[in-house]
Length: 291
Image 1 (spheres, rainbow, N blue to C red):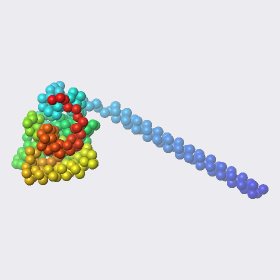
Image 2: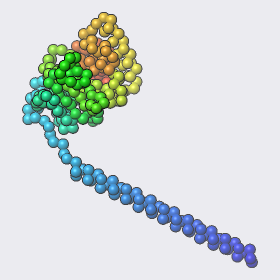
Image 3: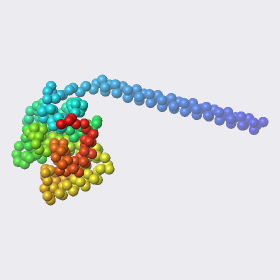
Image 4: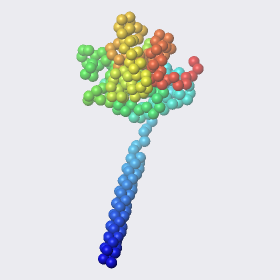
């Protein structure tokens, strides 16, 4: 009989312990649920506040933006109607998100449109592209030196992507900005050059290999092609601006100018470069208007 009571007590104790454990787990689950709901509520409030408080981007397009694009931007001229509309939207987006400031220079509507065009052209075929590494463009009247000074000797720079205190800033001269689009007979465009540097820099290094947009399987091939072409340029000369032979970063920027300014000539004289740049910038899928 004593043994029976002992087992009964143990069973009762075990039942009480199990019930207590269930109650404890239930309380924990309720607490966790309450915490999750509270966090979701806080997140919802933050999102609503952000959306209400965030000012809508104002259109920065001048009234005659289509006329300016048609008159000065060859890349835009070659697009079909749907492409032109998409290009205009990308231009508007750039102008609404990147500050443009004149430093001893007046920034006119034409300058703003040409800057935006130079930004859009290299990445037009890449959907949802954003220049996360650019907050402001400084427009100088003329050439500057490596310290961004507008006076004194050694003022031979027309454009530069800033570093250090000028991180996320681009500096470009008004004269070269305009010449890049007005002068349609050459293969140079300073704005495109500098924005290609920014594309290259997006993966963390400015080395001529834009890994953020170039498929990994093409990276080694592109490196070898750049290095081989630089050697050939130094040995035999080239119709490619010899500044491209400085290093692979400058080679990529210079040959990209050529690619967008004179695509037919680049394809004729340097078919392998053309093919690789078409892979890098994804331009093979673009629909161009009948010429």
